[in-house]
Amino acid sequence: MKKPVFFLGFILVILAAVLSAGCTSGGDAVPESTATPTVAEAVEAVQLSDKMTVGEMTEFMSSAVDYAKTVGKDEALSEFGNKDGEFSYGDIYVYAYDYNGTLLAHPYQPELVGTDRSEWADARGFPFYKVSEYVAENGGGFVAYLYPKPEDGSIDESVKGDYVSKIGCVMPVDDEWWIGSGIYLSDLIDAETGMAPAATADMISLVESGVAYALENGKEAAFEAISDKDSVLVDEAGHYLYAYDYNGTLLAHPHLTAKIGENLMEHEGAFGEKDIQMLGEAASEGGGYVVFSWPNPDNDNRPEIKIGYVLPVDDEWWLGSGVYLSEITGDDEALSG
Image 1: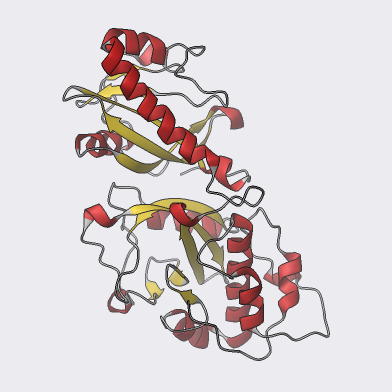
Image 2: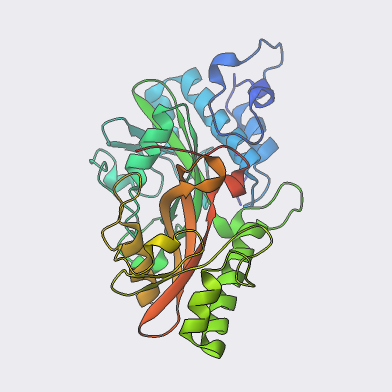
């Protein structure tokens, strides 16, 4: 990882104004200080390796917002678009959009700068731009989506199999444009344990256990266990499984028992994404992560971004589980479309 070069005149004290668990811009509340460390020192204070906590991502993004406000839009966009610049460290980088969906800067996709990305969705259909713009317009926050990692200095969005789960952070610069960054879920670390977030590992384990249970006990026994809130297929944190056939019919669910037998293929999330269709397609292709929005029963059933993981059981049905974004960030991540 290259060492950053120095920019003069940036105030490190902004980091003290940032809430370590949140992802909102603190640029307007920067206290006065006589210290004048550089951008490089501010960034290096939180970006010591290719692994970060959500708090460090917040600080990194706050640094980028303050930098943009300090040097102005044109210079900031030039720097954000430079893959060898201050704010680009391999898998971690800053991109910029205006509120019309135009990509303003991206260090690994300069050929797309100036294009309309307002309808862009990830490989499974999650409407990345619409959700990110909404969060930015409402003061900033975390998002989740699937996206390829940079390879050989570029990103190829055409290879569906290269998309992996990512936790993003977006912040407004002003009322004309906003910026974002993110860290791949595999590189995210828990601030307390120093390890990958336990919730996602537990989710995958639960889904794998559900498949094993179904194959050993048969689908009818599996449906009964999945729909039982007190069964071995609900973990201590309350995470559960859901089962569908490939036509979108709900087969088992501990919290939607009244809808079992209904076809939910056309069901839509908060931003119009067809969540069940997305999940089913992933299962039919061998399984994996899917990002979608779903009501969170622990937060007044308000919609929230959810990271799901699905696996096929056989050629007739599949099952999955999920983790709400708030379980990873520790913030209230409720949103509405």
